[in-house]
Length: 150
Ligand code: 5GP
Ligand code: ZN
Image (cartoon, rainbow, N blue to C red):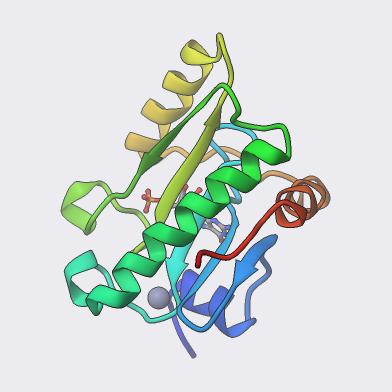
């Protein structure tokens, strides 16, 4: 059995609130969101670092990430702004050792709350998971505005 939680999500062995899936990647909501609607895009292939992925899969990951950003905006979240980041390997503060691009919708005036949650994350404090029903409802909204990249 796999011991990587993101590989388990890809294989369907672990629950996730999905936004998009295709031959090379999967996008779903973060279980411990830093901001509401925080999404992750991951390659289906297990890789710890970006450089372990074939270039086409790396490019596809970022292309899907951009489409998720658009879908978040059309769902009414993140229209004011967003943070995109990727912790590339354990030395960079990566907690789940499987490549993932973070997309954090932002609101005007949410700076203090976001900074506190971000700093807690750097200290490996995750807090309580978001209820699955909330994540599923938000994922449904984002999914309905998602278009795959060309
Ligand atoms: P990292 O710190 O590795 O860049 O980010 C890992 C992310 O995965 C964190 O934002 C964390 O909340 C999220 N995460 C950890 N476990 C799970 C899980 O089981 N399901 C989902 N959807 N996200 C997870
Ligand atoms: Zn994995």
